[in-house]
Amino acid sequence: MAGVAVTRRVMSGLDPGAVFDVLRDGRTYEHWVVGTRAIRVVEPDWPAPGSALHYTIGYGPLRKDDETRSCGYEPDRRLELEAHAWPAGTARIELRAEPVSEGTLVSIDEHPLRGPAKLLHNPLVDLTIKIRNVETLRRLERL
Image (cartoon, rainbow, N blue to C red):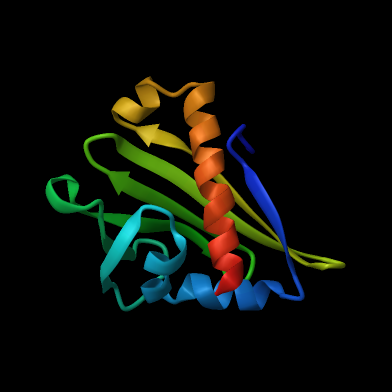
């Protein structure tokens, strides 16, 4: 079910396959996911359910290594992820791509799933997620 933090963008002239070409290439995530500093390891079967991307977020003393695991994948249509962000917990992220007359409508539905972030979830958190994902989708379209 779509939450308040759903962010959408029409990517003109692109078909869902082109969008998913980027999503299937785990090495690209550091270039379009806001907050990801570096991708350390992409498991060989990415984005098959159960596979993961291992990444680094933050800088200096605020640097943290973590992972995002695929929970569901429908080629060229949908990718569901669980992103770990210790100590905040995890987030559920669903990316969808739907063909529209102008290109592809890409949406991100993200919300806290486990941990302190879920307990503190509120409209301000949703707004922050939405603002971050507006930039994330802009970067994804560039790739």
